[in-house]
Image 1 (cartoon, rainbow, N blue to C red):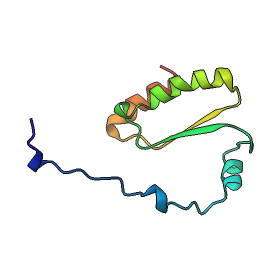
Image 2: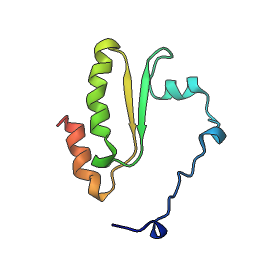
Image 3: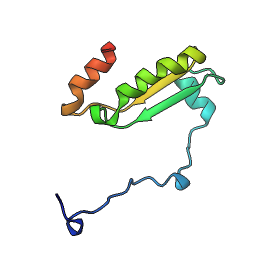
Length: 93
């Protein structure tokens, strides 16, 4: 119901082609307790139900069936509206 002239797209501030990690991959993996050969995935962002962290966690069960050592890193905090959702996904609900 909103007319196009009243909308504006705001793109992410990070341009992937300009991203250059400053910490070596090996140091980061060691700090996280990950073996150099461990398959690892991540989802980053504020914890909100609409962002789908729970879906990714559920999908990880399939990944672990094939790769038992695989790990998922959920990076981000819950804002007020996401606190209950964070509790549920931590509890495995």
